[in-house]
Amino acid sequence: MRAGKLRIADHWNAISIIAHSQANPLKAVAEFVENSIDARAKQIVIVRGKKKGEFYLKISDDGEGIPRDEQGLPDFRRVATHICDSIKRQFRSQGDKGIQGEFGIGLLSFWTVGQNLSMTCCGADRKSYQMTMAKDSPNFAVSEKRILLPFEGTDLMIYPLLPGLRSLTGEKIQRYLASELRDRIKATDVTVKVIDRTGRKEFIVVPRQFTGRLLHNLKPAETAQGDIYLEIYLNDPGSVNRVSLYRRGTRVLPLISEIDHFDKEPWTAGYLQGIVDAPFLSLTPGTRHGIIRDDHFDALCRALVPVEKHLQQIIEEQRKAEEERSSRQVLRRVQRALKEAFLRLPQEEYDWFDIYGEKLQKKSGNLFSSGSIGGGSREEIDRESGNSEDMPELDDNDTGPKQFFEYAGPLFSVLISPKSSVVSVDKRKKYRGVCRDRSRRVVLENLEYQWNITDGEGHLDENHRESIVFIAPPEPCLTTLEVVVRQGDKTCRDEALITVTDSLMDQSSKTGKSNKGLPGYTYRRAPGEMWRSRFDMEKNVIIINNGHRDFVYAGKQKSRKLRYICRLFCKELVRHNFPGLQTDELLERMIELSLYTEEHLK
Image (cartoon, rainbow, N blue to C red):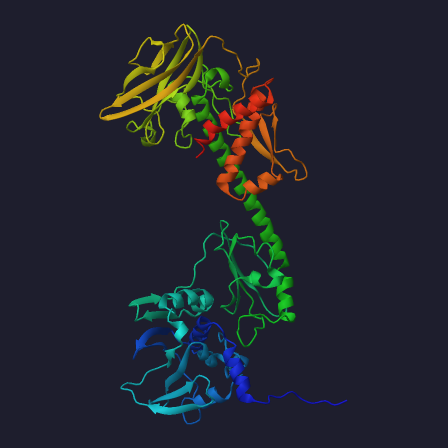
């Protein structure tokens, strides 16, 4: 058996590979800023400008500068000749905290930004010295640089920038650093300014602020390697929500779910924002953008197990609350559309819920069963058929003054109710005009009515009141009734179609039972069954199969889901309220009800 030690055959080739391993120029800029923070700088200025037709990038700080040698000069030679052996390791081993660098290769990342690098720093003699390096060159040079006034800190200049970095604007640099160095900037209280001279803009790098509700009591399990810092926020679901992985305040991965072990809920649920900071992680030296899967990483995975369970419970509770809120909104919109449809359909055939009755009963606040919808005054009926979210409930015992938003505005529209009806020959039927403002509140004041029969036969007993009685002729016909309403200079009109027949079939749903009002709905998951919905008459609830493939398809889009649930309502109501009709007649009724309902489904 033969044994030996690994060694580098071509040192320059190894250095070239390391320098090209950093593929993200913004990450390289972050490396330079971190070097300034490690030097305890309090002011860092990044300048993007143009010189002799070429772009440049300059980073200046007021930190401690390059460590000096025995002569008190900046030790540029050590920086250039100790690749992969950072002096910062010695500082950390001596207990110097707050230093991030450890590989000694950050300076080489300028190869991904520009062609030449120059670094200037003052020595103990108050003179300035400069080190220059060039991309793809093994040489460096140190020389004295003449300046008018000595300065504290370090100036780093990259010129010219690579041709593909013309879009590297000051705003992009500011946004990237705000996330990449979020906690380092907050912890060190350093001010980072970005000056884009070509765009004539200045930016201050403000650490990114998360939105949502900060989650407390997230306690990861203790690890022998160190503590894990969590800052997690619960937000409304969206693609912008992401949890990033950090190490000592510097971002390692923008998405923790990029690691296959964390490519699962709760990290991929889209509800969470924030950071997971594990200071003991081992990074891949070349890119500093990956994790070595060693025992340190294994400790992180084990420590986050109780956190993941807790977060998953919080997300499930949030989902249930959202589903309930969404269900309430869908129910209100479907019921409002059905009420509008019933005002326009023939009363004799669609008076299922006593809309035209004598008294309006209050609605129940239960999600799964609404109260009866009665009749009463025109204002009461139209509060029910209008925008219930904008109108308060009527209370016979409420004698207090109206709020400002309860007063109706100017006339905007008028509706004849019923919109379509069937009347026997020589019979009478009452119609009324429902006037509303733009917010669908009922308008009662300063209105002038004019009723006319524009087509067909029949007579009106009054034609200047808000409600009139139509007297059918002795022969069957189709009659068009028109109302014109004026309020000052504003004029609105509407038409209704009256079918006068000599044989009126009673196809209403009245069975002698008391009306329960428009039904609510609930879900029952039955993915292996073909039924879409069922009507529970006793509970007055439509049960929807949310495991059916049609519901799954409709649920991918809110508007499509709303239409689907509305059609299920129409199907169940028609089937329940037209007993004994043939299949083709039921289908005709369903089309009719769906047409009038979906028109007002908003």
